[in-house]
Each structure stands twice: as structure tokens, then as C-alpha cells.
Amino acid sequence: MRNAFLLLATALLLTLLGCGDSPKTVDKSPSSAKPAASDASNTWWKETVVYQIYPRSFQDSNGDGVGDLRGLTSRLDYLKSLGVGTIWLNPIYASPNDDNGYDISDYRQIMPEFGTMADFDALLKGLHQRDIKLVMDLVVNHSSDEHEWFKQARSSRTNPYRNYYHWWPAEKGKPTPRWSFFDVNSDAWKYDSLTNSYYLHYFSRKQPDLNWENPKLRQEVYQLMRFWLDKGIDGFRLDAFQFAAKDTTFPRFPAGYEKNIIKYYGHGPHLHDYLQEMNREVLSKYNVMTVAEGAGSGPSDAMLFVDPARKELNMAYHFEGVDLGNGPKLYQLREFKRIYTRWDSAFATKGWLSIFLGNHDQPRMVSKFGDDSPAFRAPSSKLLTTFILTMRGTPYYYNGDELGMTNIKFTSINDYRDVATRNEYQRLKAQGGDLPAFLTLAQRVARDNGRTPYQWDASTNAGFTTGTPWLKINPNYPQVNMAVEDKDPNSVLNYFRKAITTRKQHKVLVYGQYQVLDEANPHIYAYTRTQGNEKVLVVLNFSSEPRKWALPTGLKLNGEPWLNNYPTFAPAATLALQPWQALVVPLH
Image 1 (cartoon, one colour):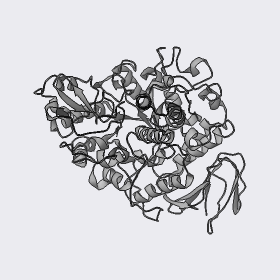
Image 2 (cartoon, rainbow, N blue to C red):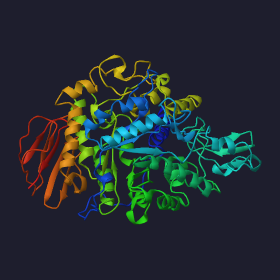
Image 3 (spheres, rainbow, N blue to C red):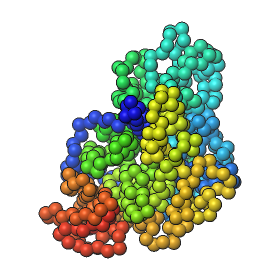
């Protein structure tokens, strides 16, 4: 039974970590790239590098152990030094923090732990003064149960706000079963005695789902979007929005539907009607970047969100690549290549992608896709940076990854703060599940691995706070921190800066056609980028061993590498690659 419990925990945790995206995706897109004319219309959100900041863990200014807006503002010169063009800020709205700010109680107020609206205005002004744009999370699949809308809705069945949420009257019997990502009992219907009804929550029971079928609710959302856009922010990432549209007849799903949750929860009736209405009434009136989180089970679903002709959103943010390795087995490079090549091929002529390997819902990228041992943490971090910044699509880079921060690998459930991990542990415990196996898995894939406080220097608490940090700090901070790396010209941090500069200097890395090479190679990921007469080769040794790689017939190197994470380079018909070596070399 141990394996059965571990597999169950893995499947559920994988879904949780991907914000509901299932590891099983079915799509008929081509498996390899084909030459095509790219939609290379120049826009700022294609050329920018997005740096994601988890504010709770970035910089504390007042000693309460929680990162805040003033702390973030104090680090703006550092952000400018990175060369990034856009900050994506995780939610800072008023919230009781059941899910670290993704349960919003007031969309027009700042969470007191983070500061005030004046602090936000100062942050936005400081970013814009440094030519850095700001994108915010738009969390409108659900609200907090402490939002005034929900308080009103549960007060009476006749309250005007009742239809802002999904309700099931108890006199009709038990609701049609629905699975919850975050609930201990995996039941997405919560009984509310005040009106003898159940309300729907796909996520935590403190995150009731909003009823997008109600036009009044939609207008409320558009008004709050205008509130922030009129302040001058530069766009939104739509959190979990693929789940917003529901079939309100709530038909019965077949047994086991939760294992392919996108098929049943995503792309509900009228979803794209709502997005087109949102674009028509709000987004089209501002020069902003809009990102669809999740975006379905494969490239063809995602294209529905971002095909320019459809006038919805302008960038897809898919999870298929980062879902690899979230189970008991480690990821395989050939599958990794297949996924990223398939997505690029599907977007070769229209639409636009995000390229990322880490975020607040993922473990640290070097611990998952690289080698976080002392010997190879730095070169493998640099290799992953090279991948992100040389693929076609807008790069997203999670705070701390530019230092090569690693998983903390907690050994006790008491160290975790994440609602998903804690609730899944309690669910397994109630069922007699294999808790040690679950904790071992969580050391690799739990979300709190990526949420530990930023490591600024070697002082107490890594310079993050003078108080007690809300989440433990990785004990490797004396060696892995910004102050040490800033002074080292060969550090992970300074390689990141160089890679951004290189991408800015060579637009072929932004708009160039992608072509995978040697697709079956289990250790080397190689591809070319081509734009007009300019062509460049990217070779990545995803291995802790030296490897040799023969140049394909017809490819000729043309000078020194634009990027190389090792100090030497010997051009030859067969390249001798060091462990985790990354090369970006122009071609004739």
C-alpha cells in the first residue's frame, strides 16, 4: 500500500503545485519545430525580461518577519542593476492570508503586513523612474470568504450579492461532487448554516469561487481592474482564470475525473466570451501586458487565449514543462525537449509564450532541473538561465534564482506554511497514508521550497529581517547570497546580468525562429535561433558529466561565444562540453 499512497499523494500534490494543471496533457500539435515566419511584431512585453517578486519573502523593512512594500522599494536599485524590464508582483491586496494573499478580502486595499496605498504609490513611482514596469496578479476566479461580497452573499438567499458566488440549497440534497485542490477532505462544496446552503470552492474553503455567469460580478471586476490600471500599472497575470467559467447545472463527472482536472474544470462555457468582453471593455484601452496562467491542457487550448485575432489576452503561461519531475521520478531531458519544442512549434506563426522554470508555486529551479550540490550548483544555475533567456518567448525569472538559491528541504511538516502541503499531509494522515514518503517528496517539490526569504547577505537572517522570519531561511545563506555574488565576476548573479544584456543586444534571441537539434540526445539540448541573416547556436549539457557533441552537417561556428558559463572555449567540429556547460555561439 505504500506505493499506492505515494502515487496518490504525488498526483494530488503535482496538481496543487501547478495551480490545478494536470500532468496528463493531450494535444496533437507537431512534435518538432518547422520553419515558419514568426509573428515578430515588436512589442515591449515580448522584449522585456519579467522578474517575479514574492513580496512576503523579499525584504522586510520593519522587523515583523514579513517582507513588505517599503522593503521592496529599498531594493529598487538592485532590480535596476539586474537589467530586468518588468516586475510581476504576487498579490499585495488585503487578505486574511489563508493562501498567502491569493484569498483577497478587498481588491482596492493593501494588506496591512505589506504597508499602505501610499507605500504602493511610492513603489510604482520608483519602478517607473527606473524604466521598470509593474504587472500585478488578478485573482478573480475566487475571493476570500472575508470579502464583503461574500459576507453579504451568505447573509440571506435574497441578498443582492448572493449571485456573486455559486450556491447549492441543502433542500436539494448533497451537491454534485466536486474536488477541491486545497481542502483536507477534497470536497469543493462547503456547508454554510446561515442560509442552509453549500458554496463552491475549487481551492481552499476560505476561497469561494466567484460566479462569472453574473454580469454584475463581471462589471465589478472590470471596475477594480480600471482602478489599478488608472494608477499606472502595466498589466495583469490572470490567476487560475481558466477555471472561472462553470457549467452551473453542475453535471456529474465520471469517477476519477480529478486526475484530469483541466478537462472538467477548465475552459467552461463562455470563458472566452468573458475574456473578449474584458478586452473590449478594459484591456484594449490600455497599453498593457496580459498573461493567461494555465491556459488549458496543451498548445491548442492556450492559443485560444492569445491568438491576436481573438482579442483576448496576449501571452500564455503554461505548466507542462515545469510539471515534469513533480512525481516520484525525476524529469528526463528528452521529454523536457519534446514539450518545449512542441509548444514553440504551435506558436511559430502567431501568439506568444512565457518561458520559465520557477515561480512561487514551484521548487527552486536549480534543485529540480539542475544539480544543487556545491560542485555544480553554479554552472547548472547558469545553464538554466541560458535556457530561459535564449528561448523564443518572454522570459520569467523568479526572485532568488539569479543567485542559484536552492530547496530548503524541510524534514518536518511543522516547518511548512503552505496550505496545500499542510492540508495534503493531514488528508494522508487521516487515511493512514505514508507520511515519511510524502515528506520526502515534499523536499523536492513543495511550494515552500521556493518561498524561503531572499538571501541578501551573510548577516543574521540573511539580511531579510531583524525579526523572526515568517518562514525559515535556507541555512546555506552565508555562502549563497547577493552580497557575495555581486562582488564575484564569475557568480551566478553576474552571469544572469550578462545573459540579459546579451538578449537585449541580439534580437534574434527574442524573435528568431527556433529549431531543435539532435532531439533524441538524452544529455544535450541544442537548438538554433534564426532571424534574417543572423543565426546562433545554443548548446546545453544537462549533465553532471563531461560530454562531447558533434556539430550537425552544415553548421559552422562564427567567432567567440556570446555566452559561456566556463572560462575557456575551443571551437571544433566536435565540442567538448564541461558538466552543465552552456554555450551560445554565432553561426556562419
